Image (cartoon, rainbow, N blue to C red; front, side, top):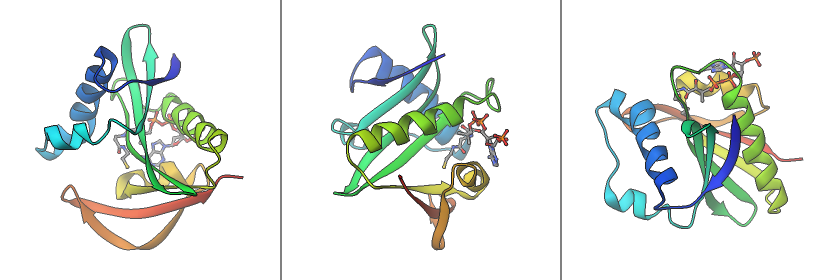
Length: 143
Ligand SMILES: CC(C)(COP(=O)(O)OP(=O)(O)OC[C@H]1O[C@@H](n2cnc3c(N)ncnc32)[C@H](O)[C@@H]1OP(=O)(O)O)[C@@H](O)C(=O)NCCC(=O)NCCS
């Protein structure tokens, strides 16, 4: 398994969208709009590949000058629980640190809060609804 940054609009990006659809959106009866995907052109796109197969991914979005927001975190359901999510987290945090960011935040689904807590993220504020399900903002200082 290897981790890398990928480019918007490439064949690898298409695989990423397929994975995100399968793991994050279709189970909720949702899809991505063209406008939503277009807005990712300037974002940091991270993917984990096992040979030519994408097995996991996330996106880092600019939040403010000190902060990146991690979103679209997904690992293929056939390989969840094998450390791929942890590797993506560490790759994303290192990349954010290298770029000089001080904080990472995310809108965590309630079901994923325990995962982010493993990496030192703390819930902040109260629960809210996004893509029709409960979420919480979580945050960590990247030291
Ligand atoms: C959440 C997700 C990204 C985790 O990836 P993963 O590759 O399965 O996780 P890992 O195997 O790297 O697990 C790392 C640690 O987190 C724990 N963990 C994994 N998923 C967890 C969860 N949902 N809740 C609590 N702990 C979790 C693991 O047990 C492991 O703990 P350990 O280090 O003590 O053994 C993955 O399960 C997934 O894609 N889920 C569906 C989509 C989703 O919810 N994405 C997040 C949206 S906010």
